[in-house]
Image (tube, rainbow, N blue to C red; front, side, top):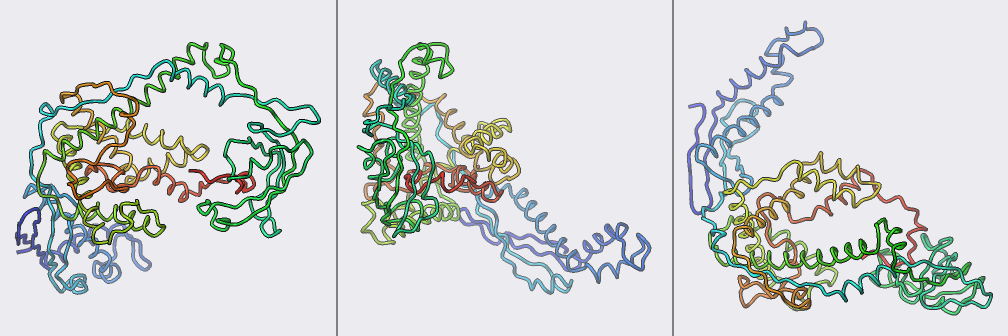
Length: 508
């Protein structure tokens, strides 16, 4: 028999099929492949299309047999899944039983085990049976007033102090040149010309700005600072440095008047339009937080209401992502205080529960989406790629092309879109009641979900995506993928080092 597929075991979510393909069948497929390509071959000493099959086999037999084996394995695997109506939870595994050297030489049958982990069979809860309470906060006019005042402050201008006796005060902007030295030696990125230093803005490392207070125009001030231990440049961490700062000009802040002229500078019709935009932004922030709380509540409900076997390899993969982050945090003493004194065994037990929760929620959302034919459109995917790419300024086109040409990167964009569409579908069918709460209640951090159990505590890693549907192949955010893409495309930041002066704090 040229091909044989036998189910060896079928316990729980695991299926194992023994597959055998005879050497004769492989040889026949090889001969057919040789006959297919021979007419197109052009070899020295032979007329086009007249190369003997035996000669082709001697030259290309091994590589062609490799193609044949790959094709037959793909064909059998797809047939096995289809015939048995299997929905694999993870990529099927192959355990080769044959001596592949002999298989490639046509001297032995191809024999392997096809190991499949299938999706659990369960019925998700009906969204109509879910009751949720959405916390809502309605901002008062005084919050809008405060935001308007802050907007004016952010857009204030600076006027030069012309008096010869004028000195730098807190809040002033100093325009000047500086050069930094460590042990008397200038270091890369430590110099700048016509730098604008706003005293009190905390844009520079601690102590830098304050030491300019009292200086006059034309003064040269020696600023002594110590780079923080967590500074973004390894060679400067914890180092003592001196900056020689030449004050060229002192500018005093001038608040912008909140009037129609101010609105026009912002590109809006009048002050009423600015106020409406500010109010909309404030309300949008609270609405986003309300949705976050409602979604977290929904995930807790879905977790409690479902109990079914989880695909072990899927859980292992998710745990691996979490544990890698835990180990990285541990290596740099960044574990949460409640984890600092625990053994790896304790941490693994607790974080595995989080992995199980994520997988369970992901499967539930995926099943609800499948039942309701939820799809992510190409338009939605393109818009997400464009939005993400725009965050990278001049590199935007390179990042956009990366997403467009990289299926794995597209999956990273597709997963959160799919999840949100399923969540919105559930919201539209569930019983959702709005409850007005205080700002503090709305913005407070959620308590630990019930499904974690009393022995577990909130985890840093658990604050990543709560659910991970099979639409996603990892928990890494698109932002990280895009950064990797920018490096791969050679689109790294080319800003001169002097404009990224180490005197400034690293980006948070």
